[in-house]
Image (cartoon, rainbow, N blue to C red; front, top):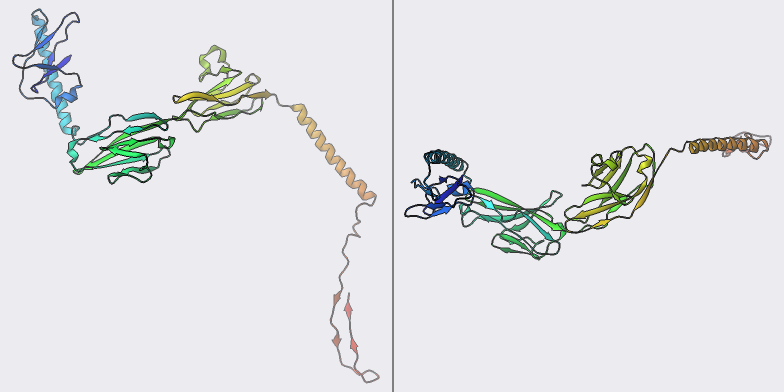
Length: 371
């Protein structure tokens, strides 16, 4: 169904779809017709109450069946327009709107960027406009407040109207920006996502060099510089490992699990077939991919013989130690128990005076020691 309305804000009326072989003309006596190229909601705000009939001319007179179809289509569109008008009136969508020309801005690092914001006249001529920045970690700061850029942005941010213009962006500017408008007791906002494009750096890889058969192993790969966050690919012996190995005949027996988003290559149960030279590659849309240094991972069986030999050596060491102590004791190299006892200490008691007549009639002073 093709919808038309005239330049005098006439009603929406249906035009019956014709074959592509016909050239249709929209005619209306006394007024020109305009073909509606937008969506229906964009046009219903311009509806008038009067009805004007459009005539479809294709070089032949419409049949009675076609005129009947025109009538049914007209009734259907009229009912549809009534429903849409009711919904618009109930929700008030046409008023107090805040919009942006581009809600997903992508620009290379150290280049300029514009973040746009516009709002309807319902907010009034003295509407308050503020811009806020939400970084990926969840913190929020003001970018534009009290009709001027904040101090941290003043050196590289200017305003044109209510729009933000960065003279140069850095990877720290990655995040979501909120344009918040308030006025006449109403509030509205528009969100703009700014992605600063930064090529990846060579990722940091952690690859174990030795893994025991039947045990798990995790190979990790990460790059903290790329923006947007890079995706990761793993290679074994120069061959790309598919994300879903079960879909490829050559990898149906593979047991690994690969996460392209965080760069982890996980082997829940490693086998000898998983031995090989591994390296990781990080890539995004900002620049060429980068890879880490290749490392060989060797999967080996558990060395039972080595474990048994280690236990035997430990037992022999204990036996030799015991024999050495016994021999040293026998030869007297170790002190005997009696010799090792500490000697008793002698406590000194101060001299005591006692009175008594000796045969000379003189006092004598005695000192005593207690052992």
